[in-house]
Length: 594
Image 1 (tube, rainbow, N blue to C red):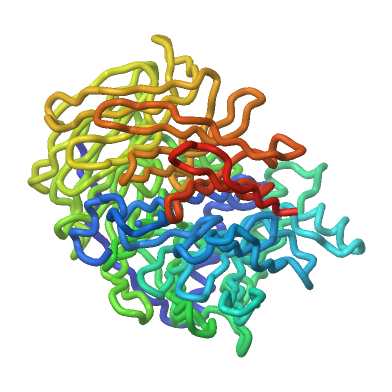
Image 2 (cartoon, rainbow, N blue to C red; image 1 turned 180 degrees about the horizontal axis):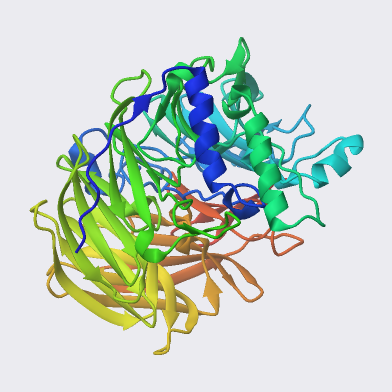
């Protein structure tokens, strides 16, 4: 097996002129007749997408007795943004541009805040982080749905939109008063990649592209369009490339001296890591910027990792269109030290062949980062030393001619699911970083796209059942006994024919409450929308109920999240929140959002 490239360093530019020259040169080499990335826009988030020290990487569930469930995160003590948060005293949600606060004790809505008031920007997405009496709202604005003044519509339609048209906005909201109120705001060019919170400190990763207007002339040839796009790059200034930012007290753009470059880059995007104390006014964010792209963010209590699959690399046609071949795909990973509350400190970077499925393909444990990737006809797991991101071990040959569908690392053990027609669940022994090995394999129909370890011996899988030809049949919840790594077994299974669950693609939608064995996932099956509630007892899965929301339209009744507060199950949809008694599974309250 070919070994990954050695670790590499980031270096500063000599001056603003050096920044501009380097970005222009790199961008001209990869621009196409349709702009950057073939004129196509892709905003991949993690769905995703992670407590202090290496022991935090054990990925154990929240301890019993806390009284409420937090967001389902990859690592205990490292929070991730989501559309609903609770601290046990209140439930805070953000849907449809509206922030709402609910008192779970009285089951009453206690506050609302319209986040779109006073702006004509399109609110593409929103999520939350919570600390004490403050909520940090993360919002992406603009982009393909951005509203232009009527006089500019024709101009806007004649230009190729890119991430340069996106704006990312942060607001802190005070929840202590009788009404939630915005107390601070921050805006920067670009789009959210992901964020992580440890204590009251939030690390926000933003991807931005240059604000270049590439014209599109329908009657021009590809060669003419490519030449014109390169002229646009030649005419650009450094201000066109550096992200602009503004807060309540100041504004500016990322300083040239704060920008770092890797050994190779495309110049089509910048990656900025911002740091904020949620309880304090939002200032400059102490930005750290890299000339790179970013796909996935993973964080432990001490480290923040940003992975970039370098999709711009590959073979180009005579007209500059990029084609990435599977054997040429490579992922670069940047590690930052985020101990303390100050700006992150870049530590090292490394690279591995192939591409990552999501944030769960990365995991830090005992001074090493484990990374699962797919490349060409098979998948592999690489082990990198965290201090310098150099490769120390690998194991390959997983799922030949198949793709990775799920990954989970827990302590010195790993699980990888690949799929094409059947679902091989591979168990990995990672005790020796220099010699990781496949311990066992289980082949069953269907696949799991999310894996959730519940103790040292059992893992829950959520995905799709399938027939022997690989045709999917419906949502499948499985329980695997992994007490013997060499011989994993499926000991329980529940299938909903023609069903699909958001938990299959977004782990934040998954709830497991270990105190009672309650397992809840959103579910849609043909015309049925709700949340499937199961109970795991030993090696048995028992269906308890399907929770539904009373709404006038199916999409409003599509339950997206579930959480536990004081023994009550709360489910959240775009239409409202429902309280369900977990003893009887009877409805206890319905709080509509309208």
